[in-house]
Length: 283
Image 1: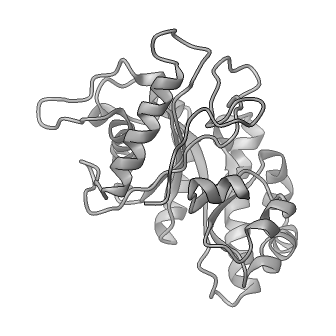
Image 2 (image 1 turned 45 degrees about the vertical axis):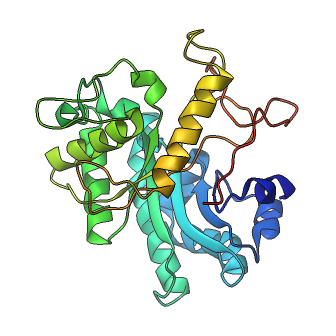
C-alpha cells in the first residue's frame, strides 16, 4: 500500500479476490477493477446460487468501504479452450444478476469481461479492423448483453505487438498507437452491430525487456507510460467515438510476464520490487 500511495495510484486492477489486498484498500480513494479468474468461470456459469455466494463472499464485505467499479469475469476467457469460451457469458449474467438480487439493484458495480488484441486478427488501419470469424460467435452475444445493460467491454491493449501497423488512412490520422488500437476495437464492434458499447482498456503497457533490442527497453516503457498518462489526464478523446471518455489500467505494478511462455518483461519494478523509474498517477 505504501508503494501505491507513493505513486498516487487512484485506480487498480486486481486479477482475483485477494482479501488481504482488498482489506488494505478499504477506506481509501483507490477504485478497484476486480477480476474473476478463468478457472472460476465454470461454477459461476452453471449455478446462480454459486454466483450469489461469490458476491456475498467477495463483494458484500466491502460494499461500504471499498470503491469497486468493475468486476471483470474472466481474462481473455473467450480466447481460451472452447469449453471456457462457452462459460464466459452465462458467468457474466449470473454475477450481474447476483449483484442486483443481493442489493435490490442499487449496486453501481459494472460486470464485464476482457478480450485481447488477437481477437481482431491482422489490421493495417483501425478502420479495417474486424473480429476474426472464430471469435465472432462468442463476442456477439456478449456485446448484446453489454449493450442491453449499459455495460462496458474490457480490452487488453498492447500496441507493441502491432507497432509496425499504419496509424492513418485516407480520412483519419491517429497520432499514437494506443488510440489506434482502441479505435480498432470500436470499428470491430461497429461491424457486428454494437458501435457505442464503451470499451475500457483493462491492461496496457510496453515491455522493458525480452523483445526487439531497440524497442523493448526501460526508456521505451517510460516513453509509453509517460505519454499515456499525459494523454489521459488531458482528457483526450478517441477519433471513432469522441463523445466517450477513455480510461486505462497500466500493466503492471510489479515485474511479470503476461503468459507463462512470454519472453517479454512488463512492469514498473524489477524482480526485487525496486522501481525502474518514478511514475506519477495522481493527475
